Length: 107
Image 1 (spheres, rainbow, N blue to C red):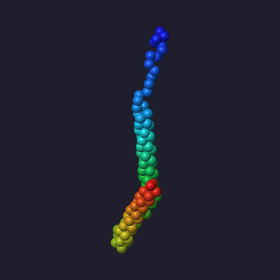
Image 2 (image 1 turned 90 degrees about the horizontal axis):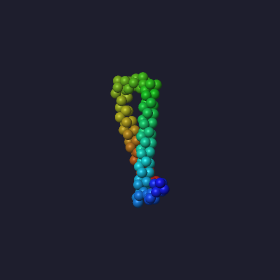
Image 3 (image 1 turned 60 degrees about the horizontal axis):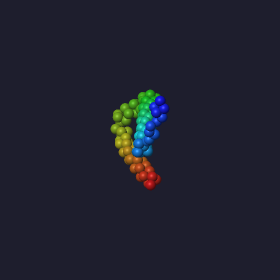
Image 4 (image 1 turned 135 degrees about the vertical axis):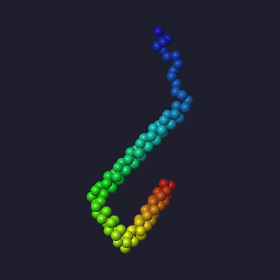
C-alpha cells in the first residue's frame, strides 16, 4: 500500500514548457485583440447607421427637395461637381498627411 501511495517519479515539465506557454499566451492575446477590434468595428458601424438613419428621418424631406430642385435647375448642379472634387481632394490629403506624420512619429 505504501508503494502505491508514494510517487515513483517526480513529475517534470517538458523541455519546451516556457516556449509553449508563451506561445499559448500570445495566441490568447491575439484572440482577445481580434475580439476587441471586431466589437469596435460593430459599434462604429451601428453608430454610423443609426446616425445616418436619424439624419434621414429628421431632414430626409428637406434633402430630397433640395436634390429635386438642383436637378430642375442645371446652374445649381454645376456647383456639385467642384464641391465633390474638393471634398475628395481634402479627404485624400488628410489621409496622406495622417499616414505621413504617424509613420514619422513611430520611428
